[in-house]
Length: 326
Image (cartoon, rainbow, N blue to C red; front, side, top):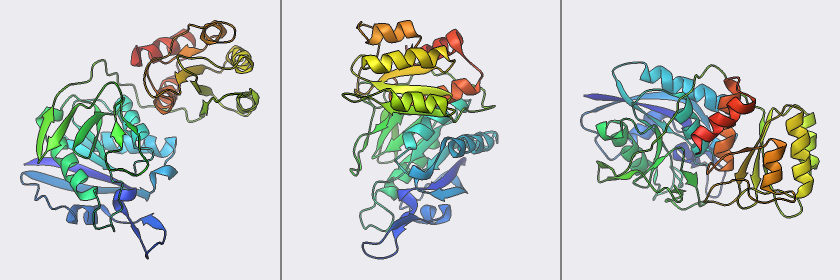
């Protein structure tokens, strides 16, 4: 019999409204989630670990870091085939990518949740949970790294992002595509990620800010945050990696002060690289900014938190970022 550990954190999958139209609040235990399953899970010994019970919008980097430690602790038991994490969808992609970067080994790490709360008659939680458990118990999932299993699809943590506020098929992997699917309990893997790297989980830098640029963005927030203790910035820049000239000038000052600036795109697909002058990406490169390939803003922030926690800086940090997003 295969042993799978279910780590619960709250989220919509464990939430209900106390009254019609009332607040939806996380409160269902892991045991109640297990009891909601229609799948008998034959051949799987499911062990429940109630880690926390919050909406994922309340999860911060420190709590996500503690969650990765809990995942590692369960996988240290050689009887544990894999781990399922039930979490809210708002920040699931970030927790999953953090686990992908910090939890070694080939055992499956599967994140899942729901878009419709547990009190709704058409909740998607039980079927997502059953699929995730089947995936975590499957030998086909070994070596995939952390994944998100949702609406029957399997997505690499590095690539997946939430794309719709309420639809049950919210997770997509953009131009990379899904890894496979769970079809009526059968796990089908159609592609495997390449180039995964795992880092020492000794520490995490939590003071990393993400700034999304818009037409006419000023340098005020960047300079204020730099003076207020921020240890690194991720900029969701325009297009292929450009910022307004006033922001580009501020980036030069911020990098000169020893604070790294990482550039991503606010576009949902494609990668950044330095092309334009007159305050654009070429000038960002000259200022010392780091271009983060096709990582989106939230994923680049997770990567920065991990790499700064390793003590990386300067060219070492640049090379590490580029190794994650060639």
